[in-house]
Image (cartoon, rainbow, N blue to C red; front, side, top):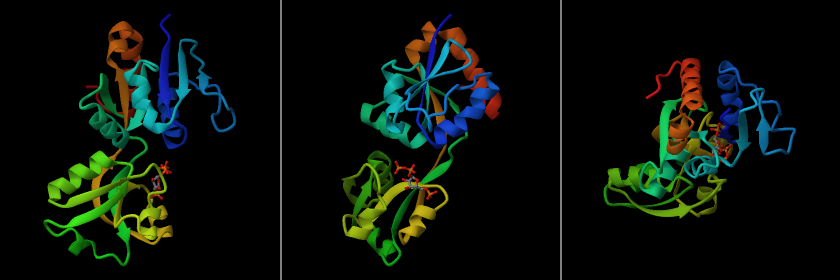
Length: 222
Ligand code: PRP
């Protein structure tokens, strides 16, 4: 029996992966909202789930702390930019879950159109520095980047930055903080990431799981 470890982050990704696991015949036996455990057993003795921070999912899979994981495209792009390549990660499936977008937002009274005229300088606060850098470079806008790890919405309100680059889903967080979305950079959904070495060593069970996920999402494994 080959053990498989799946890395997930708590919240939307965990919640939206559960039905896919169920479709593959896997039931997680504990609820991460009530249990403090970080390793969750499933009804399949050879499959376990580890709970990690969203930004740590690619790292766990890259180093083999997990054989596979589910991560947002945003997190994956930033991870690959940091490593300068695929980082030993095989990404066979767009799971089509945890959908949102990466957008630029500013204070409602900020004149974004003039601020981004060719050759302008813009102060941008974000956790997504690689996505933001590429986006503004393509527009020919010079960016002074302020790296943040959360509560990005505060940056334009406190004068830390002119604009933020952040995930937007319902738009409620922006609205509650009097910010407006001025550009949509990219659509995001979660991807299945697999450790390339594990794919060779644990080929049969991993392939079965990937195929089951593919069938459940209607996607085609690459
Ligand atoms: C994300 C993002 C926004 C919010 C947008 O944060 O950073 O704050 O969701 O969602 P909305 O458009 O539906 O309001 P998340 O809750 O993922 O946590 P984070 O602060 O760790 O990024």
